[in-house]
Image 1 (tube, helix red, strand yellow):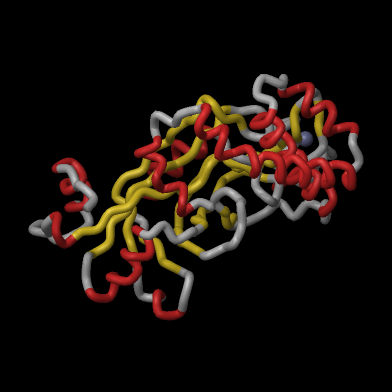
Image 2: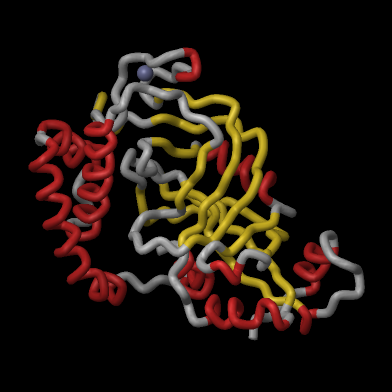
Length: 276
Ligand SMILES: [Zn+2]
């Protein structure tokens, strides 16, 4: 049974009839989006995440996993930006994410879904929003005005080039989708700069991101510029092999790592099941 505090009831009360009781509500935490480079080679800046946390409060989300769930909705009643200092993104920044809390009514229609959420059904969150500009992480150029010449996934001065999603203007929706993937929260963008089909550089970006993540897990303390330097000089096929190998090794080791590094915030991390 999830305890709902007075403060939360008050926050939820802004969106419901005033006399709603704790017994009628079901609340759950979720990760909306983060500052990791996504599969499109794009990422939100820390400032963008702050703005998105504001914009998503009050927005409803849908559950997309089967046809009978179409009418099931939940609404976000609070959201905040959080950081994990022990984890870095592929471009070397502190891992930062928007953590939201959503509520839904405990009624017959939602009964099975609530059981599924409580049982830890694996879900990925996807968000829809618009941003005012998409900038090159290397030179800062607004890419809606045209490409700048820097290539996503390539390393410049020790840092992976990506596109920065800046100045969010509106948040439209969020949803839980069943995606059998290890990716972080998926993000639907309202527009893209339409840069030339840089499929390979996107793949490189994905491989490098995986290599850095798993190398850091297996060999904590290895300097970030050393890793990015090595990745920059490897060809794409070699990167893929390395990524696959490290991923397998990290998967074998990760239960041990969890034991070695006790997670003090374990309780607040019970949303991770929605993210995988
Ligand atoms: Zn650039």
